[in-house]
Amino acid sequence: MSKKTLPYIAITALWLGYVTLSLLSPATANNPYHLTGWSMILVRATIFIPILLVWLIALDGALAFKHYSVLVQKGTESRGISLITNGLFWSLGYIIFIGLSGAILPYFLHTNYAKLAIILRDHLPAALTLIAFYLLYQGSHQLKQVANFTTWTRSTMGAFAMYLVFAMGFVLAFAHNMGAAANPSNPNSSSILHQNVLLFTLVLPYLAAWFMGLLASINIVKYSRQVKGVLYRHALANLVRGIWGIVAFAVTLQVLTFATRFLLGLSLASILILIYVLLILYAMGFVFIRSSAKKLTRIEAVE
Amino acid sequence: MTRELYRQVASITEEYLGPAAERFISRQISFHLDKKPQELTADDLPKLTEWTKVTFGLLTEDRHMIDEYTNRMMQLGRAENV
Image (cartoon, rainbow over all chains, first blue to last red; front, side):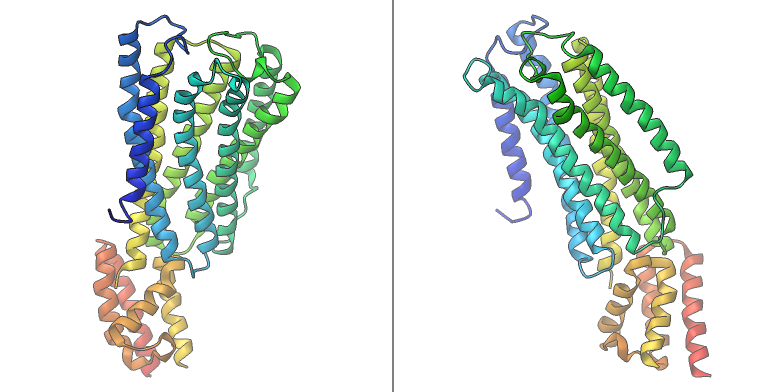
């Protein structure tokens, strides 16, 4: 077994665990639409294969960028590239966690650890996203050492103003609708923790993470426009698309998950379609990052 | 003088390869000229230009860009020899 294939084997093993846990999941758990056993398995099976592909594509993109970051570790941009690489791996960790946690949770629902499992299921994705987007932002900020750009221009202020409106709307929706769509068959942290606690442990971390994701995306665009080197800028174009794709995917998925779990009660069909779209967005983000990493690596490796 | 010449070559290359330029030129010099980057002389420029032209061809299909880069390197060589 070569060192290069080890991460892919590890991801596939995690996926097999996820599939096994999902298929053997207790029948009473999380079946709000009263699907029969086989219907439930078929519905879940339509998600399994895309999820494996998304995990593998994301891993491939992150590893390609890691390979590039090693090549430039003595360069002025190395600190920024290294932090962005770490941010990509934490993003990969996030998408793996949300899959695994959904499969594991039903096994704990009727045990003494149910509350802890639900709290972890709801909070760890926020923590992982916060770490991932913080690293992406810090990495993009470090790139100012290579290209002289300013984050807070008029366009950033405009984006910030729009984000503020969104953030206030999100907090208001949380304040007014929290617990309104409580579903005993699909419990969440709102039935365990007080609303004020959740505001600080869940809502604000998400808002902070999304804000840093937005700033990271803006910084990467500015870097790709300001940095010297016409061929280098061409190679960076797909990195910009990739970072935007990952941030957009994560934010949309998290808003959707939050709204579904805590505020609303969307139909299974509409959730499935949206999950597919978001998974494709996410995978496309890493496809672009892989493409950019390959072009940048070629510049570093050519002799 | 040689250090200044290397800096000028790196500066031209930076307009095409950005932060990767110095690493690129250092590799070209050590791999094809078997020298340290600081030891680059004006006499080395024709050979270095030929190699970088070939290598640039692996990075882009834009012939205009390759010719432009090559011409700037050759102009630098001529200026150094005057």
